[in-house]
Length: 137
Image (tube, rainbow, N blue to C red; front, side, top):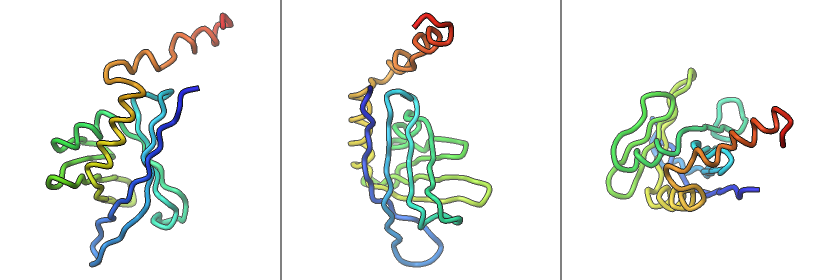
């Protein structure tokens, strides 16, 4: 079984009200799903009181450390030399959080150690899944 890479990060919720809104969050990477990264936020920041989970491309997170990236529900961009801003777009509105860039880099280094860039197809398990589907496993 491939290890799951979890990294707790502190994010600052960017809001229209003054003052910092520090929130714990978790970045997660699973080699069994090698193209995706997940970010989970605690229930206290959601509108309905439940945990908020977002999944997006690992490549998007990596690219967003250097240049603005993304056009869909998740967008990532640098904010000065030490911060990264992530935007999460939903029907209810847009949430923006700011992270320490070094935390994101450290997480990505760990994920690339588990599954190198470009090697993701080998971890998708398509052959194994097809063998199980056809009873050859």
